[in-house]
Length: 141
Image (cartoon, rainbow, N blue to C red; front, top):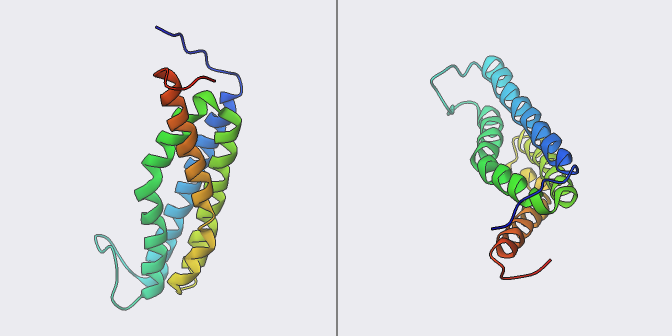
């Protein structure tokens, strides 16, 4: 049985995780502001008359949908590659801002401005898979 030592650089992963929480709060606040502006009150999730509101809501909810996978990959992959995963996580966070602000224009195609975030997510996936394989002894460091 191997002992896992957490490198001090894992602190970057922790701070990236905290930063992602600020992202989620920012996106949620934008939905709240849009609810007031476009008069789309709870429990309505979408509105037939306010497509911009729908775009703001979708930008937030799409991020919510992928957020658990992002956190899982960041926190696990970061155990072995804390700096790489932290940078990849920051790339994903920044991309979600581009994604959201592109979507906020009302033209859903402009959300693709944030598609570079997949580079961060794929990097996190690779680091996490490598970590798992190394723990199993399938690969060496």
